[in-house]
Length: 434
Image (cartoon, rainbow, N blue to C red):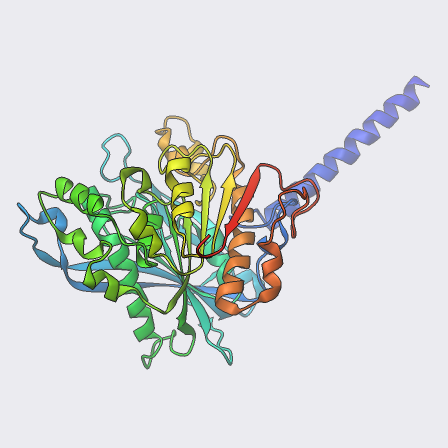
């Protein structure tokens, strides 16, 4: 009897060993890539049916205020370089060619104890692939990263949207990336200006002979996505002029420069810059409300549909007096607020790279991406779901997606979510003038 039991134990061990080995083999064949759906991912998190191409472009915005080298309020000018990454629907020969290695760095160029460390991570896109044109050009989505960050900070979302029929452009904001972080006044001044410039450049490339974007992108249907300082910028571009207090704060940091006044509420130049091609805005943990960046009049200028995302314990941008206050104050916008309870600021980035786990690194290399409560992959999937629904409604008129945004808080089962998986979340909605 004992021998039979021993044989049973050995057989069971062998079965589980080979099952585990087979699981590792499958994992090795198709490893988890940022943005891949977890088993509990909501319905719209999955990638679309289109293959994705990606290209890097260099742009120059001429005669911009060189705020970091201006003196005593006398603004000097420079030609501001910007690198952008463009994800788009593509013609790809085989699935095996849709793997890409993004070259990124961790660290902070402006912090001596956080040296720049190169690393790579994988994505599901094909470098310089042939664009897939259709009878109707694809809407444009412009993405603005945090300070510091890079154009690769949210590839889980940029790739996902491109696979669903969008041209997605992410900006490396000069003097605000991991590689070239410099004085904060550059970020305060240039975030909104960079976004407006990129919109116009993409519009021109969409008409230019020889450009792969010609006939591919429809800039008349544009959405903006921003995280942290990116949120600060896109909310302004979308119609919420900065307050006089923000202009004073900027002047105090930049030696008296008045350059930010052109982006303040009521300024004729600012009002003229509000672009009707922009149809919707998504702001993850937008920075600035706690610092008085917006007032009642400024927030009332946001009139396009908006979707805000925040952690209830955000200690960078704030929640009650931060993102939630922006949501409450944007009274002329049909708006949403998605809250991750007990999450802090990192409700938008990719998961922490494997390299950030190495012993001896500065803790911030990990905390730049991670949340201490939520699985970042889970946050990514939920963001994919709701951004897909929101942009589908407002850029593609997909009315069936409204069902995913109409959340009855008394119902524990949310549309598109698997049973028992909507815990820890809240989605608020207010219509314009509400």
